[in-house]
Length: 247
Image 1 (cartoon, rainbow, N blue to C red):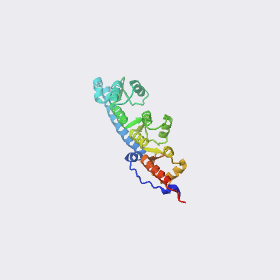
Image 2: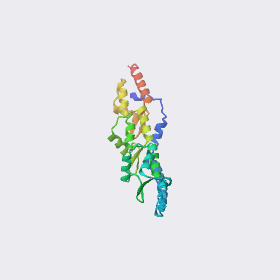
Image 3: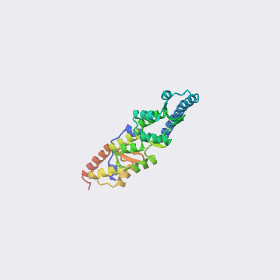
Image 4: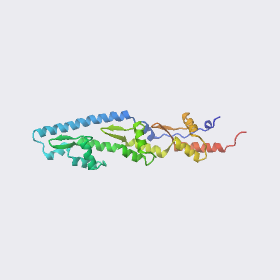
């Protein structure tokens, strides 16, 4: 009888973090964002139409702009800072000039509608930029930026493109960090087994995964094994190796 069939793994892992991570759907994210953008567009239109009407009637006073929901660049940047968005004023101004941040010109003034800033702050609370997501994940996983971007492009890591910027859900990075801390990928699992004195080739171990002899999860196209599951497998393999062989 093949050795693998003599070992039965009893440990079962019910991990809510993994469940949430696997349940994340890009289509759901896009649908939710579309609804937000529709509401955002309506809010901005209402503010701008009213402001232009007052301007055409020469009734738009400078001190009323902020109350109407229109910020100068300086005021908009200050709101971003209060909301915890890490960005320099120079970088912010550059985005406004490149039109990657929505602005409106009323008279001679370029103004930022308040809903634009509120949306940006809300996004930064729920999402990371690609660079922020990479810097967070590399605390727990050895990877380079190019490989990380490749995983985003293949949708192994969920992301959402809004305007010219791509955003990565913080919950996804938190889930992947949890995986790094509590699971082995296939290569690391084989290395761990070898370091404990169990001789097994990677393709032999992968066959066990194929046949579901070792409980595992598939996350973003990669198979991972809970550390508790691998520990049980190792202890049973070692116990089996110490048993006297039948003549």
